[in-house]
Amino acid sequence: MALHLHLTGLFADGSDSRLTLDQARAHFARASAARRDHLSDIPKWRELGHNKELVQVCRARAQQVKSEQNVENFVVLGIGGSALGNAAILGALAPIFQATHPEPGQPKCFVLDTVDPDLLDEFFESVDLTKTHINVISKSGGTIETSSQFMLAYSLMLAACDNDAEECAKHFTVTTDPNGGHFHGVCEEFGFATLPVPDGVGGRFSVLAPVGLFTSEMAGLDTDSMLAGAAKVADNLRSCSDEDDPALWYALMHVLYLEQGLDKHVHFAYSHRLRLLADWYCQLWAESLGKRHNLAGEEVNVGPTPLKAVGPTDQHSQSQLYVEGPDDKVYTMLKINKFRRDVNLGKAFADSLAFSHLEGRNLAELMEQERRGTEVALRENGRPVCVLEMCSLDAFHLGQYFMFMEIATAYAGGIMQVNPYDQPGVEAGKVAALALMGCDGYQQRAVEIEEIFNSAVEFKLSC
Image 1 (cartoon, rainbow, N blue to C red):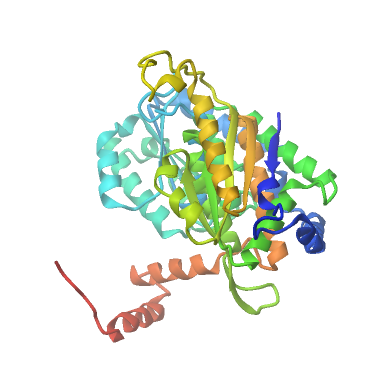
Image 2: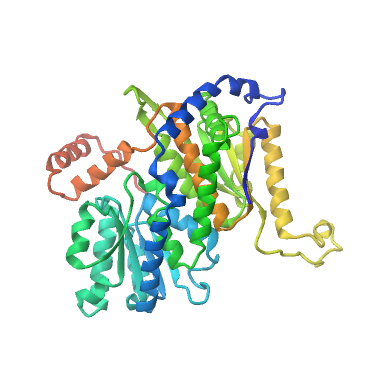
């Protein structure tokens, strides 16, 4: 059981403009320095695979909820790192139509990462709230979207519970900072059960913390194996040499191509179950590496633009651009060796030339040959592409994927000399939203924002 990284397509063979292996090795000292710095102060998120206590806390809470409540629906309220990992876990491991046909005995699971009034209002109208458990996730408790979701859900749940505040509180679990923050006092006052987001674990690195573990337990998934996969990658990459560290090579090659102007990094998922991993990757890569300042405080405005593609669907919507358009992209293909189901195409229409070559073949074979066809088209046109291969898509390999990408992201930040753990650009948007919503303490910022809008000459067209 392993995760394999195939790097061959990232290197030139003498007939194209890609980097050569020798050119990459000339920069390897930068990568080694970044790895050395990372391992000298190992972040808390890298140790989550070994944290059995957090699993036990989440499992105990999930068992309590299921035993005490008639739970037909499990709802995650959050945004960004509080939601994308949960969606990726459910998309990869739960039944594909889990929102309508979950495994027997398990609730339908939903991740609502929006404040869209149409979606939220219609959703809450469509479910029996007395049979619904809601997990509100925000480490700081200061995320305006999650606070809004929480207010709405609590008001609706309270009404559904005939204004019985004690009964209403039983339908909530709040995952937040255990030591403080805006949600901490509210939970104590209203009696909400809580789960911790550990110190040193930021939102986009929190999928293997209770942020994602509680969802996994509520959905009846194999949480232990997911953490075991993560622990194996963390341990293996800690004990191997620099030259044998696949995450380091992944990070270095992407940074080197970024420095050559290939600033779009495409995550090409060849499985429906992998599609939401690409969404999770996009936040991890963009928010960690897109920075105005480097570690020396210099203004550099660097960062890759991650893009999601799903094969073979996007072969028919994006591959024309990828193969013949601007040479400004690096591609990662996510591949599964063995799908869960073996679907044979049979013999229908086999007498027709349009179908004869498909007789007796299967869908997994077709998926892989389509992937290979796209890979060779990219490589023949000098486009750098690597393949991240999972033996199968189960909880163990999913945990491996999460840890691999998190470590690669940390390495890339080190090579680029930026801080992969802050997000000042996101915080600026949060402050602006708080100011415009009239939050106390932000009055001056609200005045400044209104001046920006009022001073601009309006250019508006209608049709």
